[in-house]
Length: 468
Image 1 (cartoon, rainbow, N blue to C red):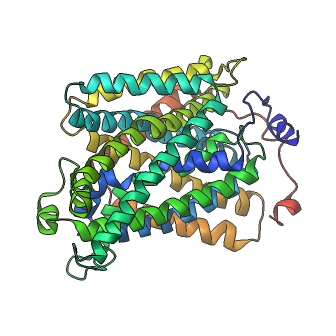
Image 2: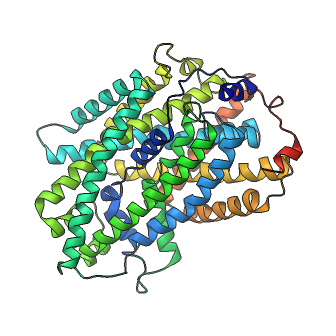
Image 3: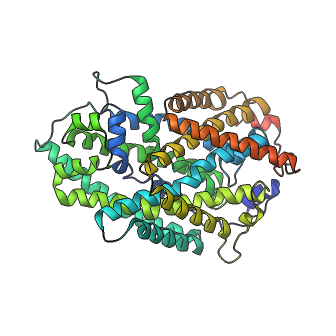
């Protein structure tokens, strides 16, 4: 197949199995984003946005549409696993690619641990007899077994789980709509705009939290070497997932905002227990609906969401390891299952250890969320720069809209979100980046400076790139 030739141009062999169709990529992205994700962090976004929770999600969609566009451009140029690590490394330079990969590791390595922790805490609250650590261990073991069997099994499981999430969401939307029509709550557009609380810095800070719900559409790019139709399908799937999930996020948070039983208290005291959405569901349909939403959210984060997060993380480790920028054992692919087994197992071990440690910290979930958002946003900023450098500067493209205006707009919006992000996350994120610089210096000192194969051989003609 010509996709194998694409990899050969860069000095790689086709080791992963190309089983994934467009519908598999779509299901993967939606499961990674979790259609009911806002249920878990609704209270935090509501309080942080001054009640304008739907506006925070709407801005998040707009911000990441530009990012999805840049992803589509770079995956077309470099159709391989590794995401921003490869795009920055090949679009700008290998050292920049290493640092981009290092930063996005902050996102990808921490995400599974956060998901397992949130799910385990929620399930413990529902079934107190089972301790948090046992729930966490159970989630990790189940997902690791499924992912070790092969990408086809992962795709089947995620499709089934996605159907379940969509059913729960449909139930909530139906009953919430009925509650609104029957007068249980007051119709309002304040979730989109409230002149009494609106400030751009306030909304920007809330968007930095809400963006956590969107992380996952970018994970589709990690599957570039497992998609049947290559890069073309990856770009389409990312755009479709972002728009579909964005609409679902906006609608459910708008309805929930009108059902909040004590808006003033939520704005003043926040949502330390993470139950604001479920209390809104209780107003709409009673205790059974609140319980259904809570359990569905816990299972969604603990099984399908963390399952696909583990897949994405293992592919990033695999891509960096085969370029000798991480230990070589992480690049080993199971000949029988066509999956990077060692990277999958390491992801499971790190997630388990991280989840257990953070479960004993009062700020564990908040800290992990902020760090993940910071790592993702910084990586997205580098992605936009990669588009401009690769196409406009190095290839001489004259497509100003696609290769300058769109990535620049995306960069500007995300930079604003990063500036308004949690200060502790900024400090820890910058400390992680500084550590990456030291590691990069160590690679140079030991004669292992970042080098990506096939760069010269893959140089397309300038006039061909100008037509892209």
